[in-house]
Image (tube, rainbow, N blue to C red; front, side, top):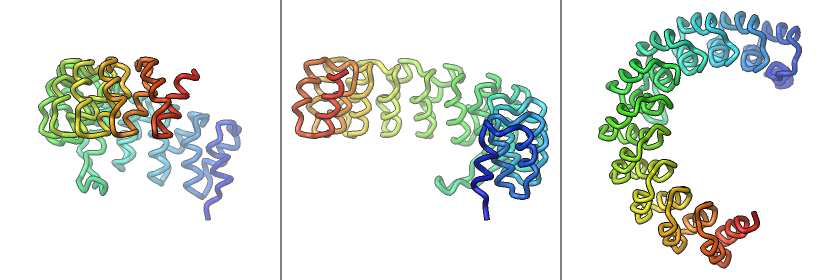
Length: 286
């Protein structure tokens, strides 16, 4: 039976190093994993746990932001793909180690998607420490999951992002539309995408132009219209139009939007829906 109290102590950053050292040798791997997760775990203890016989403990060490370069380099050679994927996700992992892991073709079946995924390459593609040339290579990978991960990287080159606007996979185009690196030109293009998820991502992006938001305000999907109504870039004309939308979620979003004119918010105080009325009242009370 698991000792939840011991696990809580093991994960508590206030626990003394001497006690953590003892817990790191506990018979229960759940406790040892809790020590590895502890943000206050000394580096010497993490070094010890990096050699643990249980994969889940080593994976926790690989994910720790307290792990140093030597530990991460050591675990990048681990026999378990999930451990190597955790190293690839860790933002303290060096560019050199990430370059090596970008060639790791380990796959695992994702039951939620009913497909195999390149778990290590996807992780490396997302890491902002991954060198630009490696990101470019992964953005052109044959697997859509890896391409989407590369596009979601906060340091993805803008030309790579723009090229993905015509990617055959909607998940890649959605990742491009969500990117903080997305240009107005890219978002204008994707605003007309045939896939709802892509258009929704454009509607939520704070870089989307007022003209594209005005176009999306007429979308047949209520979630997209609500996203437009929440976007501070939406112009007053668009927000006024959406304040009369049949869907209460859209009107509620208009009431909460700081760009909505005060007279529109005052009108929404009299809305027939309680959620809209509450949002409008709260906005005026600020």
